[in-house]
Image (cartoon, rainbow, N blue to C red; front, side, top):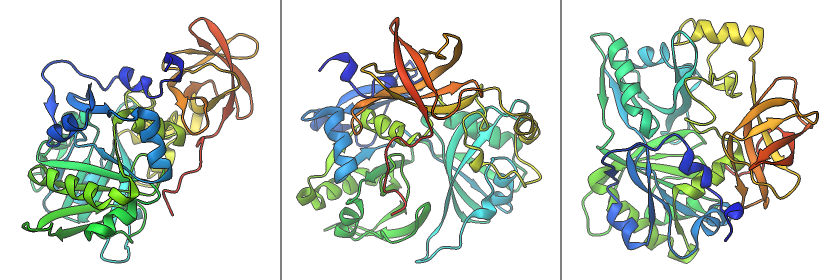
Length: 395
């Protein structure tokens, strides 16, 4: 396989990597047994891909059947006590009032952002699980978990406790059109709506009951679920999923495939498409901002930027030739002027072309043709509005 055909390369340069001693997932031994190629991500040693197929096969499994990811490196934190939900709503961007109620005893999960108070830049994007008015569970990105917890702890009223639970829980993502069949086979709930969750007690064969949070969410664009369990129970759940999914040929998938899948959907990755220097307005995720809320971190700066118009906009690019864009490559207009920079870029296993997300000058619109400087050679690309493929996530 040539370098130009190797999807997921941008993950290795994502800005999420950190040096020093790497933490290990509770499923680390399972990854070694499956021949995983490990890499540093957010301070953790996580599987990038597995032996027996690699990124292309893992990507296809999720688009066509079922793929199972260990994403235990993701952060975890709790905000609890009287007024916890109101406190979170006054700090993070999205509006918790938009959540629920839902059917089948489900409660609401929500994509949101933690922004810098003065600049409006994105410190992190995360998922909020609203269990009750006094009980909120957060899933930040791995590299930003400690900073999100620090900022929330510093601002919390005396009645609210913020706890860092990063290593207490594992997260297993079951993703793909047949993901519900795998969960049903082991007796977990599947019929709750997209972006909702159910806390349930699940009893494995010949074992004691295990508490599992089953969230209808994911980062692939396909129908899927994210299971939050105590770290000590991770191997039990992982093994049972693979046993039950054997007939569907479920495949273990690494972060390389997760990166190509999310890029095809146009989902931003913090450290590349979102950062302290990139605001929600610039990244076109203003839909995750509760603009009518009287208060959240960064509100004044973001409202002003929204009114004036952001100085750059995140757009999609699809290759018109054989070039594969990568992060930080320069984007030029047809006339040769520099008009932006690639933030995420990869080979699309589904489309079989190069695709990218790029921050562009607002004068560059959907349908325009631009050139990306791919190792000194101009690569012709068309500006589009993501996604690059149609997923099944809300099915």
